[in-house]
Amino acid sequence: MVTTNETPISAAVKVSDDIRPEEYKAINLFFNRTGAVDKIKPEHNVKDSFSSLVGGVLKVISIERGKISCVLDLKPPILNAYSIMHGGAVAAVAARLATACVRTVIEKEKDIFLSELSISYLSAAPNNNKLVIDGSVIRSGRNLTVVAVNFRLKESGRLAFTSHATFYNMPVSSL
Image (cartoon, rainbow, N blue to C red; front, side, top):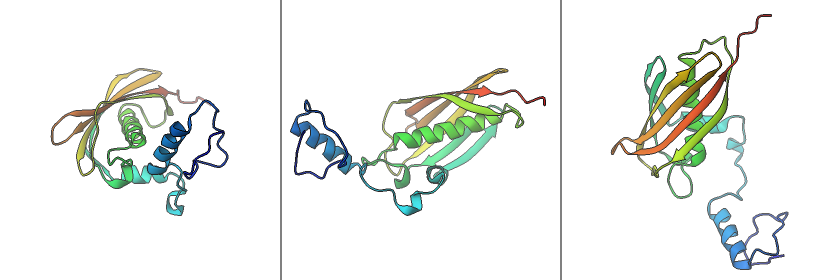
C-alpha cells in the first residue's frame, strides 16, 4: 500500500502495490486540482442541473427541417479546471442539439432514443469565446436517424469538436 502526506483521493481507495508513491502523488494531485474529490454543492445536487447549466449558455439562431444552428457562450459553468470547455458539456450539447434535429424530421408521436454518440475533440475551446454549433440530419429512415453536430470557434471558424449521433425511431404503438 502506498502512503503519502497528500490528502487522499478517498480513504476507501485501494492502491495496487505496483503503483509507485510518486505516481500515486501525481494522480492524487490531479484529482485534487481538478475538483474531482470535492463534494457536490447543494444547489447542483438536483435533478437535471447539468442541463440547466448548458441551457443557460446555448442560444438557437436558426431552425430548418433537419438542421439547427446555435451559438454557445463559453462561460465558467461549462469549463473544466483548465478554463476550456468540459468534455461532458460538449457531449451534453451534442446530445441536446442532435435530439432537437431528429424532432424536426420525426413526428412527435414516435419515441426516439439515443443509441450511440461519438465525439472527436479536435482543439480546445477556451473561456470567453463563442462556438457556432450546427446540427444536421445525415440520414433518416424508418428505424434509424443519424445526426452530425459540428462545433466551430466563431471568431476563427476552426472546427473544435465534431459529433455523430444515432437514434432509434420506435414505431407508434397500435394498441
